[in-house]
Length: 94
Image 1 (cartoon, rainbow, N blue to C red):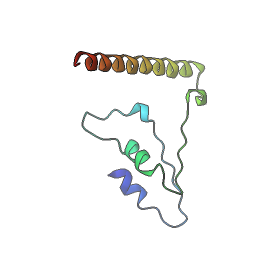
Image 2: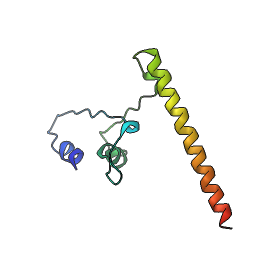
Image 3: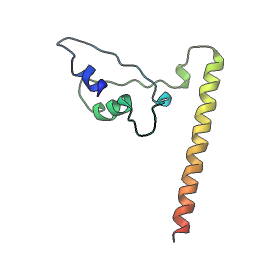
């Protein structure tokens, strides 16, 4: 609701930049991210643009890029394991 409240108060000629990192949302279970919701709702609205930065865009210490890469690899492994568990459960139900 706060994201909607902010965005609906833009005046004529106004510009706004909202920054956030969808990979760093730490809300308690059951709470929805206003950033994620805004991205979903506004994805096809004319006049709104999104820029997604990748690990190649990290311009801090080179170690930070390697840390980001390590977390991405871990997330891919978790996703793959979850898909395999889901597939096994589906096969067990047959």
